[in-house]
Every structure is written in structure tokens, then in C-alpha cells.
Image (cartoon, rainbow, N blue to C red; front, top):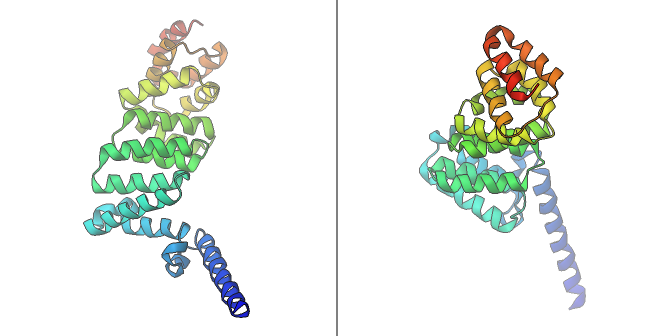
Length: 240
């Protein structure tokens, strides 16, 4: 009997190892996900959810497919609750199906789990903007400034996020005590609109922000042509 069990056991282990490896490989080769059975799917399930939710084109996907992606995302989190990517998928599914309040909570959870991950923070910023959650959008933008020197990403999202007075106020409060204030002063002046840049600094000053006076003067001079009237006021407000 034992002799018969050993080959069966070895064959079972080999199958488990095969599908587990196939699932891991599907992370980089999505086309492999179709060959991974449900009990072994983790990375594969991520691809299935993204396909059924439709991503940016979710309005073209059927209601049944959206509900299926929502169910799969919940199952994925139940199986592996830590990865932020899984919460991102759930938030996308909730937004696609119209569950804005639930999506807001999920966005917050995902951002907390992936606070050191630039890709996750960027995805959460986009979702927060879709959910019209200005406070979360500001927090996620602040995370991008703290994590990244990718000027393209910062330039792409900063103006659109900070156009909202609520988002700008929340962002400026974080900026006031952030280590990346100098980076914001240098880079922000080059691609933020003069009004957005000045109004963000004004709120930051009220929140107790302190900047190097020479650096502040140079940054304001960079926008002097279109914001000359505010230059002296901001310098005075900063205490310089």
C-alpha cells in the first residue's frame, strides 16, 4: 500500500508545484493565467479581475462582468489581505459598479498597505480623483512627492489635483511639515500654474511651513512674469 501511495503523493506534489510556478509566471505573462486552475490562482486571478472589470473602459463592460470582478476581488483579498494591489483591484471594481463610498474606504486601505510603492500611490490617486475624494487625492499626491522624483508623474497629476481648494488645502498642510518641501519649491515652480503654486504656498505658510529664503525667492522669480504681484506678498508672508 505504501509503495502505491508514494508515486501518487509525488505526482500530486509535482502538479501543485507546476501550477504554483505557472501562477507566479503569469504575473509577467498574463496569457498563462488561463491555464491556472482556480485553487492555485493568485497572480492569475489579478489578470482575470482586470479583464472582467475592463480597466479604463469599464463603461463598455457588462454589468454581469463588473459584478463578477467585484466578487473575485473580494475573494482575492479574503485569501491574501495584505498586498495593496488586491485592494486597488477591489476599489476599481467598486468604482466601476458605482459604489463610490465603499471605493473611498478601499482606496484608503490600499494606500495604507502600499504607502512606499509609487505605482500603488499613483493608482490610488487616479481612483481617488475618479471617486471625487479630494482629501484622499491630496494625500496620495503628497505620497508621490515624497516617494518620487519622476517629474512626468508629478507634472501630470499635481495641477489637476491641486485645482480643488479642498485638495490644495490638505496637500499644503502636509507640505508644511514634509521633508520634501525643498523639492516642491524647486520643481513645483516649474510646472504648477502660478495661481496653484502661490495658493498652495499661502496655505502652507499659514500651517507653519518654513522655506529657505533664497530658494523661495528664486522659485518665485521663476514665475515672476505671470505672478509678479504675489511675489512680494508671499515673501513677506513667509517671514523672509
